[in-house]
Length: 75
Image (cartoon, rainbow, N blue to C red; front, side, top):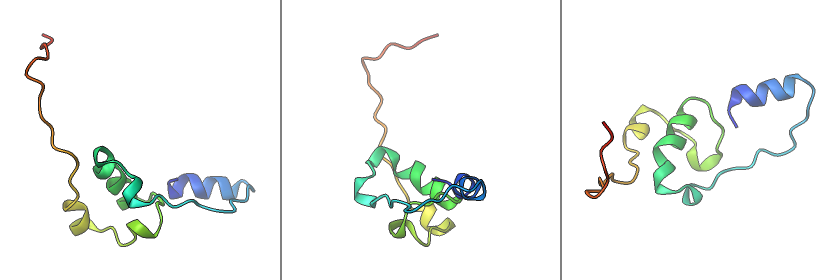
């Protein structure tokens, strides 16, 4: 959950008892870049993503894209 959403919920009077961490090994390779970018911009994902800075963000790599040669092109 982003800090923006968390703050809005808490400020409205709703108590959040536990923010569940996302274990890094549970994030699929496809989503590594997305979750790293979200954490860098304030998304709370837990201790496994603590210390996300620009240098660490630059090192995140998702899965390699391999185009399907049999796919049809849409004009």
